[in-house]
Amino acid sequence: MAKFRLLDLFCGAGGSSMGYYRAGFEVVGVDVVRQKHYPFGFVQGDALSLSLAGYDAIHASPPCQAYSIASKYSGKAYPDLVARIRERLADTGSVWVIENVPGAPVRADIRLCGCMFGLRLRRERWFETSWGHFELRQPCLHDGPVVSVVGHGTPSWVRQKLGFNPRLVDYCGAMGIDWMGCDELSQALPPVYTEYIGRRIMDQLEAVAMMAAHREV
Image (cartoon, rainbow, N blue to C red; front, top):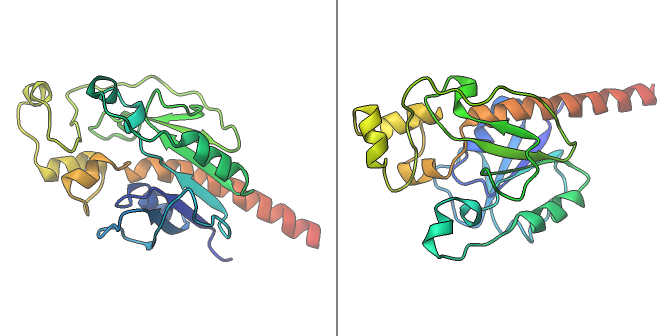
């Protein structure tokens, strides 16, 4: 049986893509900026205009700066793309997921954080799904200090709690990623998040394929 194909929009250096690959997908990434460390098939292009046809599933991580806490105090204007991406995805007929930070205008069908997977990482992310997924989960539980993976370095108060100044190897360990630099890590999702979601998408696609095959018999 051929692999299901997944398109990763706003893919960055491939944290999300790696999780979907581990879940069993053939993955292609899309980003407006060339990603030298992206590990799979890559298309440099605009997610708002590129053709989305030919994929079984689509993941989109629109820029999150417009919804982050830091942006509320920076005074900077950032693009708000969630609604436009949602409209594009709804027209494809594919299974889709939109990911963003807490407080973004996405329906939080799935909420994931590093503590769910044994990562020494506080990084909650929300996922809106085309199928309106629902599940109950325990609140975040971080038993000790956690690494803060951000592009401008670890804040001093986090360093004080950790008792050391994290290095790149510490950031990589916290994220479960070993092929990115600090700036790329700050924008990435831990692959374990999308591996978790990818297996749920895979279950749906396989069930639909089995039903189609049964009808043809």
